[in-house]
Amino acid sequence: MSHPHAAIAALEQDVVALQWSQLDRRHLSYPDIAPIVDELAQHEGLRVATIGDSYLGTPIKRLSIGQGPLVVLAWTQMHGDEPTATAAVLDWLRLLLERTPASLPGDWQELITLHVIPMLNPDGAAQNTRQNAQGIDINRDALVQQSPEGRLLWQQVQDLQPTVAFNLHDQNPYYAVGDSAEPATIAFLAPAYHPDKHVDSARLQAKQLIAHMRQILSHWLPQGTARYDDSYSARSFGDTIAGTGASTILIESGAHRDDPHRQVARRLNVIALQTALEALLSDVHRGQTLADYYGIPANTADGFCDIKLTQVTVSDGTHEPFQTDICICRNKGSQSLYVDFIGDARGVHGFVEHDARQLTLPGLVKVGEVAEPLLRLLGLSRENSNG
Image (cartoon, rainbow, N blue to C red):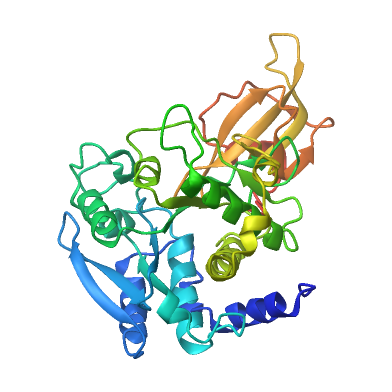
């Protein structure tokens, strides 16, 4: 169903039409995006700069549009195994270069400078790991800056002095929206820059922009957006960058039913980023309040599993049989399944759920063990709508 506002409906159509089809993949590494960066570089309106190299020597590039005083900086894949926003920002740049939304003023490039760093951690992307080649979580390296990638990001912040900073990530698929049965497809955060969680003008603007983006996305995700916990983390780049006076916004791409490559989150990232860009020029977000921001339900960890078996009977032939729930999850980066939880799983939802009250498991099962034999014993499919 199209968005009721014609401009946003047109934006969605353009986003879908201009997506890089070759990026519809479970994972992305540098060779996947390098040809696209080269193709985008052919556009007269785009500037491409190599800002440094990863630990293993892969170039890290910054793509820039515009020359206005309002500076927006976005970076992706600082965790190498979190690729959704990398595809999204490349879609966004293509949109701006090839089919500039009519809702942007004609002189928008004189008002805004947009900088995008796609794939800050290409070494981690190559290995499909969260960390870089040193084994360092770049997002926990803001203070010591032992990673070359972290030093590069901090140098960009110092040089560019962004007005707004977008820290773009993926979260694991098991987050739920509050205590609901909806996966958190998009989660937002305006990170704290102090343990007391003060709200200065920059953080207020971040929260207003988030509330505005959430309002727009609610057409597609009426219950699918969440608010990440804002506990202060001095080691984290988002919190540190917020301390520079930038309106810093974390966007976490999460799961959506029947969407293993997170293409729903990818599309909605572009729409959210574009509506935020337009809001910065129109000040429409100023009508949002702190209550609107805090009205976004909490991003709840462990609210989902891939497969949930409800009330399966376990009988080892020696002890009294008992009934229990069993939650099964997927090993990150593979297709294998493992037993994640045994017991009362009320409040945990499965992307696939089986009422197993009529099934008996002839032996104990342990947390952490491979789940495929268990499913075969119960005569169940390993089908998983999330992957």
